[in-house]
Amino acid sequence: MSTPDRLRAEELRGGALIGREVIVLDRTKSTNDVVRGMTDSPEGICVFAEEQTAGRGQRGNKWESARGKGLWFSILLRPKIEIKDAARLTIWIAEVIAQTITEELDLPATVKSPNDVYIGDRKIAGVLVEMRAQQNAPHVAIVGVGLNVNHSVTDFPEELRRRATSLAILRGGLLDRHRLALAVLRNLDRTYAELFG
Image (cartoon, rainbow, N blue to C red; front, side, top):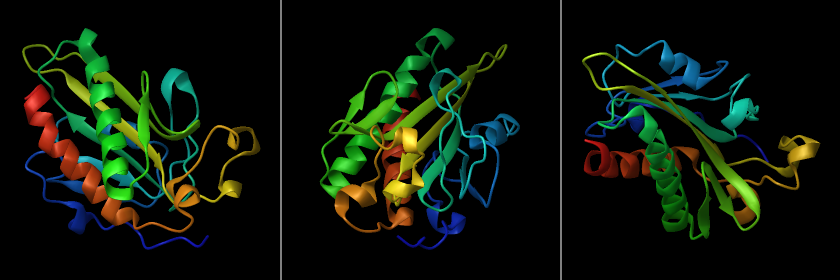
């Protein structure tokens, strides 16, 4: 499968909060690390990367981020919740991703607690939330997402091929990553204020 066009930051912007500012990097270690260095930025800023060289999942697991094949991004949030309730953010974003996949692509995506999105018995996406306490201010949350979009089987390491899949494999052809990213951002933006504002 060939690689589709790059993500375009100027065409992903537009949310009321989430996505009103979007940055697309060509390559970085981890989008969560980038956003961690931007905690003075306005809430809702999103950083995408075409490639991550050190993407992370839960419990320090490495997240494979094949160049130009998926959606690898992080969002800076300041939710009105306690640190101990960070799992609510994880569940919310995983549910929004699953719902978006189901609605946009007619694929039966489900959330596998605590932080993964599956289609059937294969993992399609993962969420990593990192929260930091702030004195006299809302806590900072960095929400990282990895979503496998246009991978072929050989884009996954041998050890992951029985557990992971991509939307392109399931649909039998390449998808428009830009359109999917836009749908995910809009759905996150629409639901965030209701739950955490």
